Image (cartoon, rainbow, N blue to C red):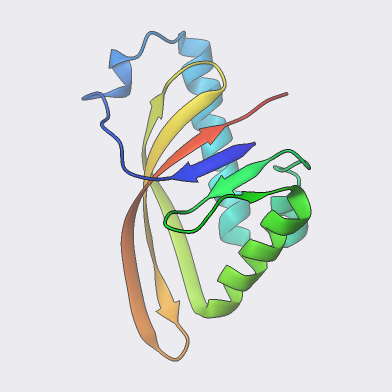
Length: 127
């Protein structure tokens, strides 16, 4: 799976996409399952989403490639916060394996500084 977090223009609704209903449902379920595993903060569960060719890009940093490096990135992110949460607000289907999802994120950075953000994430899955 590849993940990129960056701004982009989106259609007014996911209905504007030329994607089958089955693909839309699969993408929504995939995104929700990924965010559920992200929310768990269990690296073993999160690691199932990535392979050695996976890429995570959180601008302005450079992309991180490979399962081990991606999990190290998430481990470092999780350590920066005493509390960190995500909630999916909308899923925009691009095709059968690609979606952009809007989410909000909030939490508490160490030491006790609150954090809140709106995020657009491009998620692309392979078999």
